[in-house]
Length: 503
Image (cartoon, rainbow, N blue to C red):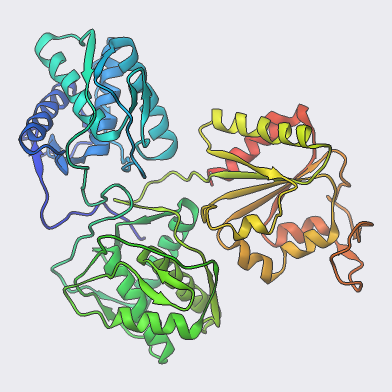
């Protein structure tokens, strides 16, 4: 089984909160208040947060620590002193702040703490900011603020009536996951030998992880060793180079560190075999001790290492399934983040488009009603538009690779459904999921043996007359659908979409 683990950089700042060497995953009030003092002291000296704080012998990252101390604040407010379980929580993707200096009353900072927990539980990461009466407060400021709250509790055996907040002026948090976009991946001192079977196991797990979460792990465990994602990229490149030469051999890792400032300009499209082979050779030839470049230049533009890693994952997967290298691989620019380690939760953003079914007002209201309910469940959802082109949304590089695209249609168009099963459409869809919602005016396709060509079909070839067994055709091609939708079925549809967005 492949495991992704929190990376341990070569040099880290760790402040100790206890001398206990146990590996317990639960922490007490006393341990957290001691940790708060350690973090606060480190911040005052260094004007930045430490990479880790050690609590009861366990290294806890700052996102994990913030999650713990905000839960503790909320519990103490309700009179509970129960132990809290350490949870893997990622850094925010793009932290931002618009805070002004002032005081936040007890009731409000407890509410903010509760809101952080809800967001982190839903998304698996600390939010980019949380709203307060003094403006938006970001991750680093919250760590410093809630540490002071617990220090006050440790001294006075009660929570303060208010807490002073000040905009963050220190350095940004840069543990091994950085801000979620530019990780510092570790180099291993060991030379790890990886067999084709071991690498293929890692490929399957990492590919599924990236495509469902739109996140690149900072480390990968392969052949029983934890290596940086840049080292894993070099392994993939060497594997592709070997396969192109007809070799099926064991590969050894090299010391390869991550790019410091990745950038990208590629356009969505097919990357031909000659291009990805050339790219693989250049990465495979990196010498031990090298750093991954910020980008490589290929025919479609500049490509960063996350996009390259996903590209190579697809190439190796294609080979494993077809026993040959593909002639091309469809690739889009990277829209995701890089994480410190694997998170178990999946959360797909939902983009909803609609045919012109009734009129703009009614059609938009239908979309917005679904969006409103999804957001209540913690699912990010967006109205992409009425009359929106169902092909254009697949080409839109701003739509994340793990998006769930929901299409409201007022009729069952045989040609459109047939198109969804073509290799051309699937190449555009790539790693996204598409879910079709037929409104109650549409012809039902479940159990239908033949769906004739639509009377207003003026875009398919004249030879196309219809689609046999349209329900099975969609299902066999990996699509799900909902029939007979109207406003009375809102809650039912939302629950279905929630499951699709979290799987």
